[in-house]
Image 1 (spheres, rainbow, N blue to C red):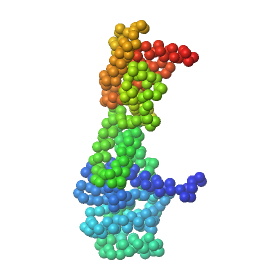
Image 2 (tube, rainbow, N blue to C red):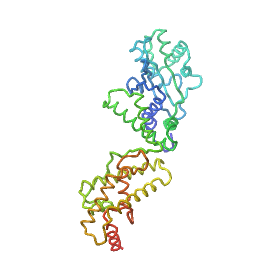
Image 3 (spheres, rainbow, N blue to C red):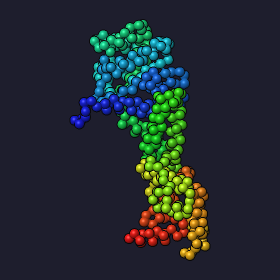
Length: 398
């Protein structure tokens, strides 16, 4: 414990709970796709293979330096869980095997070292286990003795032969890097972002399963399919789209929002509904671009070059729709031209993509609004006389 830690801290226990789904995800990525996974059914995690073989896994995240010894409760509590399943599924006829993954190491000289060897003899394990149990006066251990008492010698040998201990299992903070090593189809700088999205989806599946929203086990193929879909978004011609259904936490106020891009839309006499959608597009594009930047998914000057591309296309179309607009043009004509220009940006620019396969409309529409919000001078505008009006406002405020 650190000097500043509380003696009542439950940090290690809390890490243990988080460790279980994270380690399960790592394990799943090494399993055949036809396996299914249960969480907190007969043990912490349960893997069921296509041939019916079941592996009950106990997962233990221990403090640094912990050791597993002959009478460690982590082992014997798991034995009670496994033994109950072994008996209820036919004893020697059971198709279950039992795994203990622990971040602890096995103490030198402990008979548990045999369980880290998958070829160890079941008779020797049963004999040594019996000797260890006989030396204990613990009430908890006494319960295990009672549970083991009705096994025949052959059944005890068979039961212990099914147990494997995996000591020195990677700790919770080591697992992301181990998973990232499996994401070799994605560029190295994108793997952490991909891992975080995959883990977020995985945790949601577990929550749905534990709360009863989901009744079916989680198939390994589901995980690999989801990984494939997410990984595809990190290819060189694509970017992940993660804000498609997001809304500003502060809400949307089409009538009172003071930002410049909103003022531009009011100058066109647009409906509150259209302005509301514009505010949402701005929010989603801004947050999406920030997310890409934080995850280092953008190459040098990619956003700047994309914005320059949009400004160039806007300028070309503006020349077309404002060809007959002059400083003396009536306000009605200016509004009509501005609405036509904005309609083009809103509905006819889907081909102006930051990357070839980034086809989400809010990216381009929202980027136009970001450009329209630039200060001190917007890089795009809709009303032909908006810049002149802005100049007068700024001059008056100076």
